[in-house]
Image 1: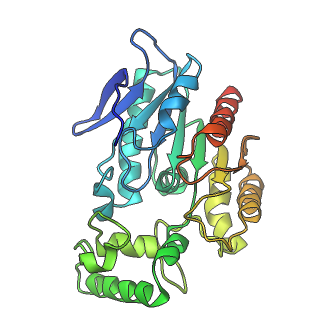
Image 2: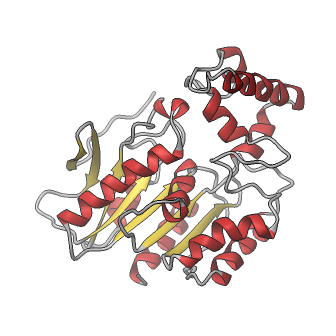
Length: 300
């Protein structure tokens, strides 16, 4: 049976139709803000570690869970470009509310795509002092864990046909996407996630393990050039990463490109032993992750 509980805090109306929930006790007035961005289908309090993280933060920081148009089931017909525009509104809101404070973006899963996209996509956005990527996994490689090669190719073929027929925003049939996702998924978003070869140009495709140095230089290297302090937190037991992926090698490659781009990778970056994708196991992996976040903000 699902547990129920109450969570004290402040609900911020950062955009005409969007809100963000700040975990904090009444009367406290933190100066600095960590904006938490969830993954596909996430919303308020859906990721287990947000509440214990919020409780562990010093009084100078608070954790804010952002609600985007893509939260819950909305992600399937939207894009990370759309996410980033709304995240920029939220950052601007807290910049205005706390002009002397620092803002950190903490992405979980697809929220990691959002953080990286926020830093490197074209256009101007409000500055952030830090970015933390927790569970930065490849949707393309994850899909291959759930779909046979024939199912993958068939889904891509149908999505391409929709797009060629100027129906990219239309939702694909449930028989194509329903074995993996409960949310409706448009042809455009499916192609962004599936990111078929040979070029793998899907907008969501930042974290695949088969990219060469040139491709990584254009993503992680570009993020490094922005000068924003970054941390990468990868779960040793992340169930959405194929067994063949060398997690340590991949993480070191990303870190190297950030540093070669002139960026700062915080010492908290690394593999969290025992951690699955959302740290649902709690206990030691969650304590490890929270300790790394606390160290990160202390060094900002």
